[in-house]
Length: 339
Image 1 (cartoon, rainbow, N blue to C red):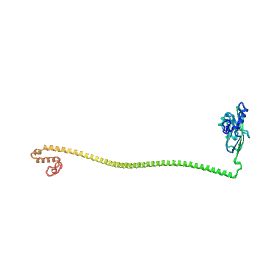
Image 2 (tube, one colour):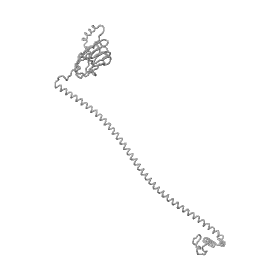
Image 3 (spheres, rainbow, N blue to C red):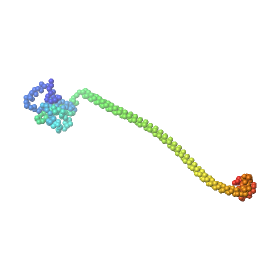
Image 4 (cartoon, one colour):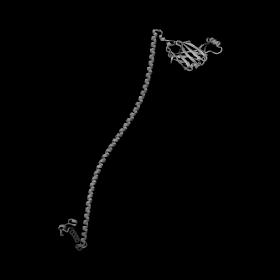
């Protein structure tokens, strides 16, 4: 059976029969109130070079140490390895800066543990844990021994074995690293290949669309060319028809001039006919009044009447010719027609 001393410290488990005399003595010496004490559960701590160590100390009786002044001091140099006061870390030795940490999770239980990282052989020695608060002052000493396993005399086969193991471990680590790197590169390459395939498919779709549009454009160009040929043909037909219209207009002008000329001649002819008609009418009026018309009635002697009328017309129209049968105008009928 083990008994937990004072506070909840993981290293403070001792047989209760060993602690019982000390507890009785403490109780007899301090019958009134408990005096502040610092107890080190392990007076000697060992470690190898490069390891992290924890120097443990404990308040007795157990009490909250958050507001205490806690100092870890190296005996060889009497310098502060770590100094804590009222929740703040204060000055410390230069060679321990960034390498020490007061484990604050246990302060409320009275634990004064100090962690030192990456210890070296120069860290070997005695360390004092001193605590001061309103109840008084107390301290405890912890010895730290740091050893370098590679500085000791070892057998050659052990060195060779260590070298081989190191090489094997290094090779394994390198192999795993290279495998993971290759797997990552393969995955990345697969992703790139998939992206390239997707882009190729997209480019193929775009190319098909461009080909379709090119075919459509070619069709439109053919239609335009056909329509241009039709327009050219229409233009040629229009030019030919314009030439025909020009020719027809020229012919029309000539025909108009000919018609105008014919109209002029017709007007003259009409004028001449009117003149002759008036002459014939006068002649007829003169014949009706002539002695021949009186002697030869168309009813009693039509032939004589007609002959006398004919000769009267000729005589009236051509007075220059002698009125003899068979000579000159005697052989011409009415209006110059041969008899």
